[in-house]
Length: 224
Image (tube, rainbow, N blue to C red; front, side, top):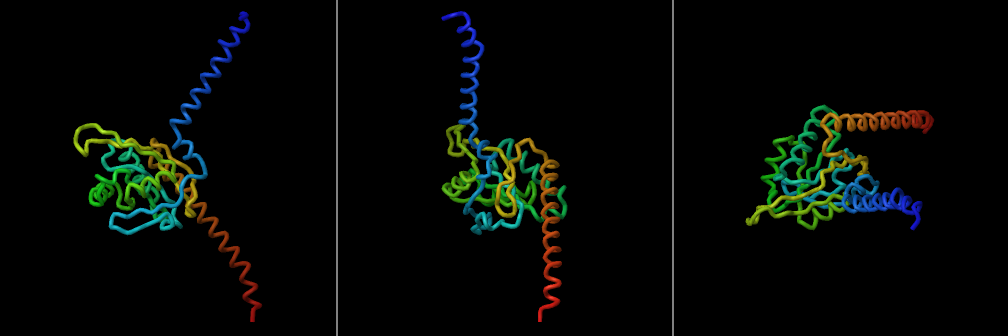
């Protein structure tokens, strides 16, 4: 092999191969992130509220919905995110009525309704806790591209942690994916995004209603 060929292989071919391997590995390891940035995020689910009512994705139509998959025994990411959601709701003021935060447990064995209720109320009672059968939870997580894996840390039946995705998904009032907040998103950042979206929709709805009234006015005046 000539000196020129060796230099090409060392300086160009090998680095490109390494980049390709790294990109493929990142894509494989970060599938939830790939889906979290796609318009396909979100879909039908059937779960239960903490008082036993059956709800679906259709239940929350008309609201801006924040969806988070976690569990009450989570050591860090869940309390951090729920605290940010709580702060966002407070900052939104009256606009918070247009937002419905959902906390979906990925640990139904330990997250009983009583445990979840106490946990959620320590942040904000406006956060809605949802649970279900393992199959229902898995189906909901699949729709959002979320993942969770149980890891044993001891000999007892409750000696385990759940590794899970940490994105906070924002859905619009029609159930369409808007964006995903990173786990580092602050309450102020979440509130600012929601405030802008709520105000924009309110303004758009007001314009449409005004236009409808202007169109209907003359028509109704000449109707018999």
